[in-house]
Amino acid sequence: MQSFAATGPLVAALDIGGTKIAGALVDAEGRLVVRALRPTPSAHHGEIVMGAVAEVLAELRAAAQWPDVVAVGIGSAGPVDAAHGTVSPVNVPGWRDFPLVPRIAAATGGLPVVLTGDGVAMTAAEHWQGAARGYDNALCMVVSTGVGGGLVLGGTLLPGPTGNAGHIGHISVDLDGDLCPCGSRGCVERIASGPNIARRAVESGWRPPAGTDATAAAVAASARAGDPLALASFDRAAQALAAGIAATATLVEIHVAVIGGGVANAGPLLFDPLREHLTRYATLSFAAGVDVVPAKLGTDAGLVGAAAAAAQALNLESFTAGV
Image 1 (cartoon, one colour):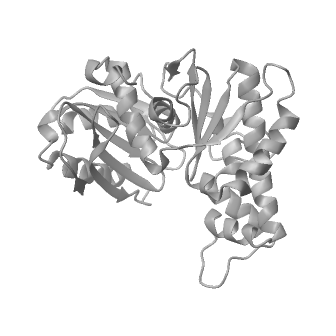
Image 2 (cartoon, rainbow, N blue to C red):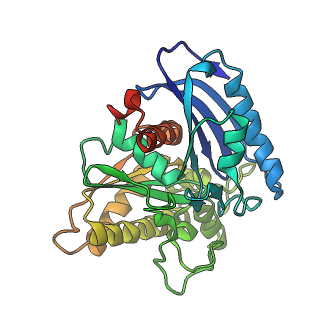
């Protein structure tokens, strides 16, 4: 656990995904004053996953700054159900309608808890302090183990009734495509997520260097070296993302699409073909010209955004002035 001194009220934030469970105490300037981290257990039993969350929360509660915590914000891989406080992440099979909010509330002595999808949390962070700052209409996306997203419309974060608004990863962009774990076919996530970039490359005949796992990062390294199979897998991911962004721009008139998550670390390998494909999909005058930019807050976005979303939902005055 890492920490530094801070003054004023804090929000405890949890960022829960298929790969890691991160926690932090966040101040009103968006600084992470205490951090904790655990890998997401691969076991399918929900209580084992909850045990890892409890360990992260226990580290945060042991911090000297914990008495200053006034609320808890959770950004979870989706879908989530903020109205009922449950989560059913596609990439965490042990959690189906898992009562995460009441469990966290009980573990923190009854603090108010706000749940949003991880894409909504990332959007709150990027609109507050990152690449979407200054835009009134924005789509922000997490492209990692899964693909999530969130919307800012008219200058306001739009989580939706259940906390899932903007969940672009499960828009179908290939109507007869591969079956997605969500039950649909040809979803953006099934094409553009990190594991699926690697899967598609392997299925096409690409092989990682000796001693290297087949990951999106390994595919990116091969693509940078000019491997045509690796380049093709990234191009296909970019095409799927472009189709999803164009659909969103056509529906709600966004002006910027912010892309974060581990896959975005591929840089021009992803962004160059994405922008090119977008010009072919977003053709109507009001949908064309969307800026596509990398996220600024990196792996901290989920935590900063979970705190920001909680502060906005609870109208915490010490935070909302800057959110």
